[in-house]
Image 1 (tube, helix red, strand yellow):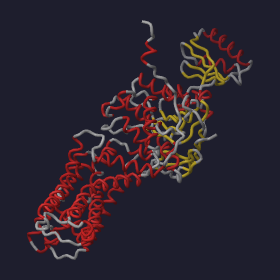
Image 2 (image 1 turned 180 degrees about the vertical axis):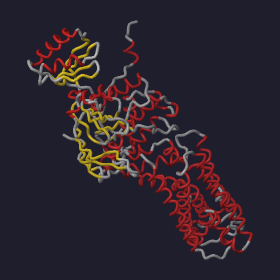
Image 3 (image 1 turned 135 degrees about the horizontal axis):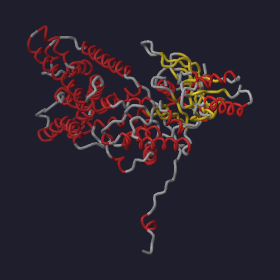
Image 4 (image 1 turned 90 degrees about the vertical axis):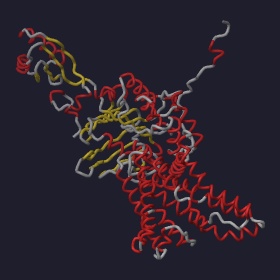
Length: 295
Length: 315
């Protein structure tokens, strides 16, 4: 052998420890990075294909009515209306508990169960920052279901119109309701999902608990709505989704025929109050839970 | 220069447990051993210094920053490796450590680069792309160390870093800590109840017991020679001690061990050696060993007054 093996195979040099003298971006960057990592976790990015099925399936199913409605509008014009902005969130409401049950635990349960929190809290972020970042991540992720599809529908309706410029004018009135409703649903649902998820130490329990709250509440609310006067008044308050639908109607208008909200004559502002109470209660639960966790 | 200082630092937990009782100490650079029995207050001290726990009374500064008001700034500049398991099983070491680097405030490019560097330094190579759930205890301890080191802290707090490791793993972990302290130049505070390990790596010791400072000094002074001669015999040593006392020596006997004070001995060191030899011969008492007694780390936590070291305790 003429050449030594070192000459041909290359050598690994230990260049020693290098100190870091670049920027340290502090608390805000810490929060942003937790939000970013949270979004990646919710949508299963960088994880196995299996963990992408539910979030992406939900996003696609949520957008499906919008695509159908646009296609019908292109083909049949304004003769046939598949869905409306007002009805949209109520119609895809079944997807929200599923998305929440599958992805909210993903964000918080592992950090509690495997005691990762001390590693976060020994960095520039505090407990409040951490909880805020997780809530923000979940709410942002939920927008993919509560806002994106309705925006798609809006865009489709504008582009499908013969006079696009005139259509923008016609449809512009609906935008505040679309955006406001989407944000409302996303923020409140994120609070509810996180509050339930952070109480459990296993993802399966958390998912089950979230599904139970929405399913049982929804079924009970439906039964109450059709049974009688007094019960019909309680009906809307058994599920977060109905409370949110009532609040949406109060803020932006647009009744939904088959929502329990339609089966009672309660003034709509009561739903707004209920939403505030629900959100506050969830935040209190989260605050107490994270204050109690010892590091 | 003191990197860390505490003044009458007190921590009482709800329920009446006092973890720290008026601890005042200054800690400088190097590898510092924070020693004490389980429950002595080591972990509590570290958590207060990190700003994870509020102190009940007193104050503490880290890098001249107040732990009560500038905790976030402190936590940007220190690294912490907790005693317990703290790793999520479903991500890879690379992903987790670089995420932690970003939470520490590093831009994403720097976070990736330093993650690769640090994982190499702690000895994780190909396995760093696998999920942490499949790691051995030794590998997990390395990841815990890597996440504490990834943002290049000025001070590193390690809480019982050799917990759960086998002897070979312990040796490697201690070697790593030594490298970090000496070669990397990062002041490392190692909390441990294992004195033998601390003895191997630390240059300075802070000994605490029941939330109070026992002593803080360079390691060497903990093991320096005392002013006593230790004599071991084959049988009860008491008769020999009595004879020495009558000759004017200060001698204490316990079982087969005797301590003779050298500083007060008539005739100095040589006088003591000669007297012990002569009296032992006269008694026909076989000698096993005669040596100039050294302090031992364990003395710190002994309550036996004849074992020495007690006179140097800080009240």
